[in-house]
Length: 428
Image: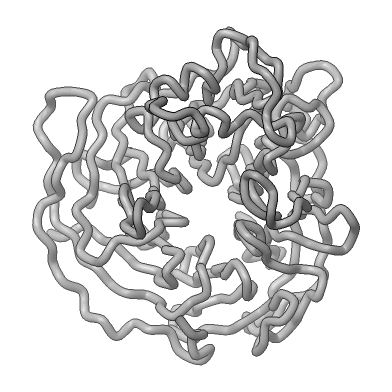
């Protein structure tokens, strides 16, 4: 796909109605939720849109992994704000920002006090130092939304994978995490990944495989309680590659959605200072040597081993080694299909799904055919257990759902790697 014309957004498609949602799987025998959807194509011809963040009036900031940061105004006008190295047509550029493999410009979050401070936060990969790092940048948006200024890197030490392209588990730029969200407590939550480094997840000082909780200047939240010796910015650790985090609308509890290692995507209710239990180091629990000292994929190299056997060999959450680890509340029926993002639906327009969690799943490919590309609605009990799981029947073509974001108009917005941003709204 080519680049979007940076003058007006694609809002031409009229909304249309779809049929009932169809339940794909259920944790209970409850009656299937049914509703109808209106669909609007918001933007197209983007370069791997990664995330969105909204102002109350519908102004939408969005990132493209290999291009940069842009904003769509309520009028439909799109302004290109901050371009990465090699990107054209942006008001400002940052030559140290680059994309490679899974790395690039990823999460974006608007400051809750934007009306007074006009601050926005963007997570991206930078080659400012070697080894390269992922970093969280704070910027100021000017009054007419045509440019940004005053870049300050408030986190500059999240690991980046520098390995060459012949690495046994893929090339450079893998497993960066990348979601940025403000919690109801006013702190920034930043998710990071393990960069295919077996030492990172349980490391007290390397800031990969963590959920960071920080203030607007990048300082640790005073309430953080990581284990002794850990970087104080650590809210939770021992993750694999978290690309989804959302906050329960009733309690404010942070919940993550995380990629699994050939098995067991997970949703986990976080606890302050908690260990997610991912530890792919060799010689843990009787493992032998693994390629590049990373055992995270080793079971996939064993003929005839199904996903349950893989999970036993290399558990996503190793409760045997770490019995106090945070247990997942959902594991995608033992599959790894790229659970990438999360949000909560809110409002009476969603009926029984008011307060339910949604997760975007990118799917995996076999013989060129994608499997598992979908959005799941996950209903939770008051005890934060999974009560019901329903797969949305979508009124548009599925894709690699990189981001799901609840908008200020009560709609669900989705971004796909194929270059689209969609809006889904319940019908009457």
